[in-house]
Length: 367
Image 1: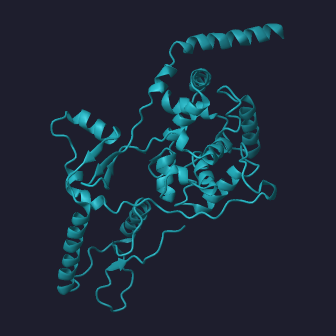
Image 2 (image 1 turned 180 degrees about the vertical axis):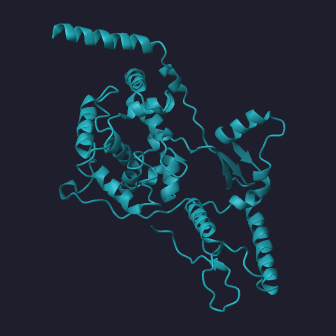
Image 3 (image 1 turned 45 degrees about the horizontal axis):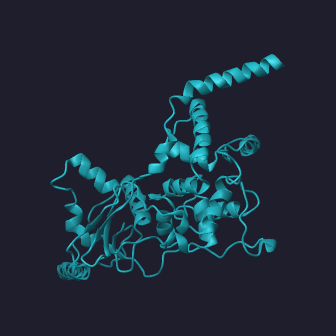
């Protein structure tokens, strides 16, 4: 028995010495500079357009409400404020739940391990990577404070629909800043890291709500303290309000001519799409929008005077299915607004001439 223990210890020590020298330096995390959004502004500072590879808006932990931090800790790492990077109890509990469920229903990685995987290691699934992850997580805990680790995690994490970090997600799903989020909204966001597509409130609102209740309830990895705890009352209903930029089309000239003529192409693209620039232009947004509206309205009137000229195309079943799928995906990225003209598939003709365009009714977008 003693010999076996010594042998196992020797193997672990050898493995540690083998990988320790090849690990990235955790000191690099102190100079965290992720890809952030470049903003194009009008002559009075109004937002015209955004350019990015990853839509991320970095915010300090001081702007994040306590309920948001509690929600993510409850969902992802209940013992975050107690452990030193590795939570053996959570790993064993997750392994037992996964074994009983016959599949992966709960992970055992701590928030610190997730930061390690996202910023210092590749996402490959292997024992060697997990071993490196554990070593680096311990080193990070000895180098950074818990608040600094949360700052990295909550700004780096992908939360679906192109949103990286909690500020971009707050805008994407609720059209508000992170400090304005309610407990219901915080808990919904906290449920997304496990599977952003599966729990998307746009694609599967019912599953998103179920995941939210899991985060709030006693079955998750932790519990969130909130008012009326004794009655176990869940927060108020959710209303999803997608972020919309009415000004995007007004920036056509500046948006098309956004490459720096005096920069090297590779440098220009990297800086533009990832550098978080503010581009100030001479465009007067109100006048530009009015001009574009006048052109659009007059072109429609001109088109109506010439009468209906037949469909744009005849679609077979496969083409129709592809068109509808692509249109649905586009509506998720940019929900139609009141007054928008949309392409539509006409499946029947009741004799009314001109049934080739559909007008979106007014009203807020609600799942």
